Length: 98
Image 1 (cartoon, rainbow, N blue to C red):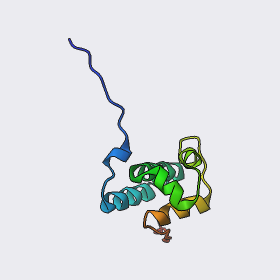
Image 2 (cartoon, rainbow, N blue to C red):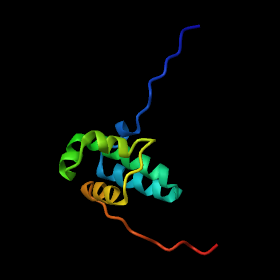
Image 3 (spheres, one colour):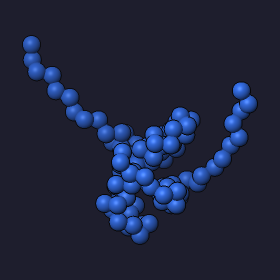
């Protein structure tokens, strides 16, 4: 039997269109998991070009990568600025009563 190899999958490779970005963020928000949302925003940022995003926001590219890494903890302001630069704004909705 032959050797089976796997390539590491990077979600950033599959986020291409503005609709992909919107749906990815929407699904992440529906999970109601802040760490997952930050991970998704990082994936989207990488898909659009972290270096350019960092330049647009006047931030350090390495710092931006780290902020959205598994060990990172970006400030609310950084998250809001990244989303704004990607063409989105934060919104809030009341939870449905259970």
